[in-house]
Image 1 (cartoon, rainbow over the protein chains, first blue to last red):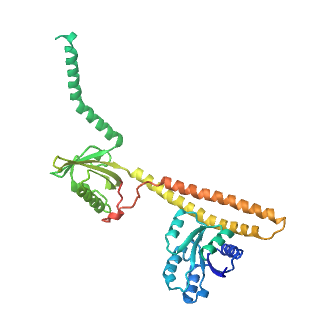
Image 2: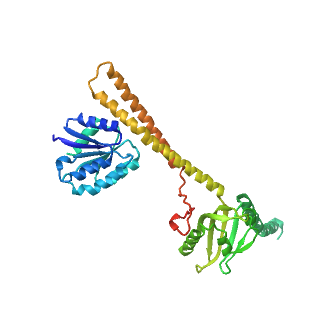
Image 3: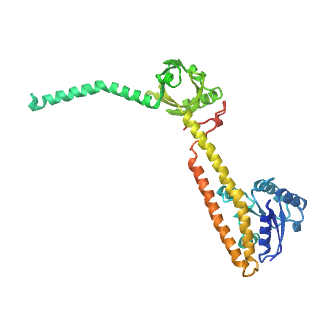
Length: 132
Length: 246
């Protein structure tokens, strides 16, 4: 399987650590980069619009973050995506069990799936398979 | 014919009918008065031609206005300045709609100058040609009920905040802990640590089940307590901000 680049956007660094380790424990080779907020990810992607090696294959996006929420980041990603040389697969990953959050995520044309924490190894494997 | 042939019973029956018919308006009036007394309902009627409004005595008893007749303008002058445009707008919409009934809530100034929330029920009566001949209705002071309703909404908002807090502030760190426990479980650990980690995974799973139960319970309570209609402060002239009691 190809080496995949994964971007984790989560303000909780322990949660990011868990997701990172879960991805790394899968059979797929994954290069995981953690972002404590959406702005850092967006800046990185804007700087490397034409460089597919620098762009993530898969993004996990938390919803409730202090500066920009996952929804706000998603809006900016919607605008940015057509200009990218590689289209990442986006997963909303949250501890929220509120069906409204799941509905909102599924109404976004760029979200592949809404997933509820806790993250498991199986969940990470599924995300990697779906983004192949 | 004599009583043996049924004359007397017939006369008696006719007399009874006569007495009952004579007393019926009295009984209806008594029933109406008792209903008004029990509900404190102020009944009004507008004459379609003269536009004179006739009120029952509860305009004085409940609203401290001791009139039996007023003009329509008098009624409008006593509606709260912030509500009057909205009331007019919705009232005129009703008149144009051709519907026979109307219910609306607005603030009305009592004789002592205090504004109270009233629920106004109106009805139009048409003749055979579809022309309006009478318009009548009732006004109830619903201030107490409305205050209770607003308090209920306030509590529901607070309950929603609690549900949100449980959902995010509590379940967020809990899922991180569950993830950590699951990670630890997948590592090569010694026989002493293994059962401890397994118990941590089990305990966090049980705690999460309780948290999810709390979230669904508080969300369920919140939706149970919400009244069907939204209560929005009426603002002058803006139909979208009007509160329709229907």
